[in-house]
Image (cartoon, rainbow, N blue to C red):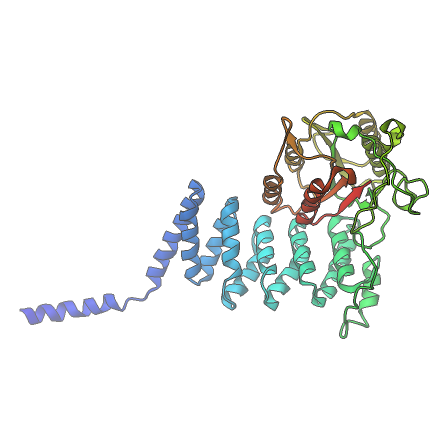
Length: 452
């Protein structure tokens, strides 16, 4: 009897032992994905990250798909950062190849942005090739993320694709838009050349493509902005892209102060600023202008040197030069937020006239609620650029606000849209304010200009 039982039992036991592992892997995948979903719903960082680790450890495309489609689409900033760190370390081979495919094919633009940034942080040629490809993404935010990473790599491999991307933008009539401008900016960085159209670039590149070596920067030269000369509007010498733009202006009480004109340096002949444009007083790039030898009596300083009046004058000139396809808004802030419009408006004659009337009527008073102002600006749909002008420390109830939480908030708020934030400050505001405004611009791929 025992012999008969063994003969009946042993084959079944052996069959169980040698079952294929696929069903077990499938169950592990389902369990890990379920835990990831639960972690997102509960905002349970430990549960979510443990699930991410298990999904990546499976080493399968399905596991990576779940991490990307669920984890990166869950609007959980801390988890996104954790996943990005894990994806940067995915081994080269099938896993990396699949990430490159997802960076181009994922349905959600924010996911493509994050994967572009991940791949741009990796050293492999195939990762860089995927980043270059995303310069042509259908969503401008993805294209801008790709351009950020291409500029950091500083590789001549990108020159040909950049020229082709510029040609596509021109064909669509987008040559004055932000993406085309950023393409030009990176081309100038990579080549030291300053050309205007895709055709110019093609003719320059064709005889050099197989043997190009970037020349060194000429000693003693300094660049401000892209070096690309265009005819679009500027705000304190920073070019305004013909896209969706917000001018975010501090009108706190300190904007009533009058600053003495800088010493004569040959810039304009009357102390009115760079290039003789009048009223800008833009400091030379890369450093501070020498302060005047003595501070004159404020009562002897003309009203034209009041910070608020200088900003009004410059902004009116900027608005007048905006091309009609630009969509813009003006947001004023002190301890309150006041917008010219509830939404972006096209720069047609009527809206320009109304905006200029709005600019002429505002006056300075109150505190500097910079954080609230930035939050309001980021509520703008499909925003592409912010021009933040301020002369004072962010404050609340007469208490200075720390800068780091504001910078952290901007980084999180801007992680998908890649809005360019340009900052304009005043020399007289001091070193701490200068550091803060420079940090905002650098963090968000903008320019910093200092007025004096």
